[in-house]
Length: 147
Image (cartoon, rainbow, N blue to C red):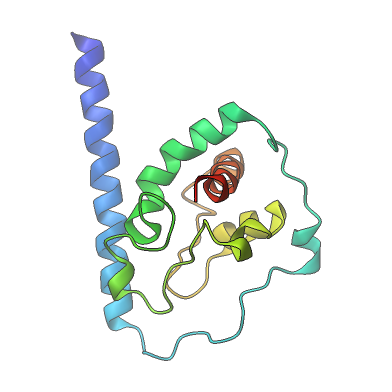
């Protein structure tokens, strides 16, 4: 009984946090200037060379999916196409994680982008541990196979 209550409590905390992030993104985008970065978002060369310590690890991708549902789906959607419930209010639009462009990016680039953030994409440096960001990269790489 206690285990179920604890599990439900954790789900509620996760839902609260996802809602908080979504609302924060809406407030942030409504207060920002319409002029958003127009340059392509390119990671620095040093980030491109960083290797994913979890590359090819199915368990890491599984854990990444759990994180994705909480932190990424509000903007990127359930299938990663950039069509989440907050996508309409975000400029520039969220990336399509299933696209060839995202799928061809080195893991280090994706990791750097979610670590640093830009424009409406927040930085996850303080919210997620290094391993969790790498797990997200592992999951994002599986989305190209589900097109």
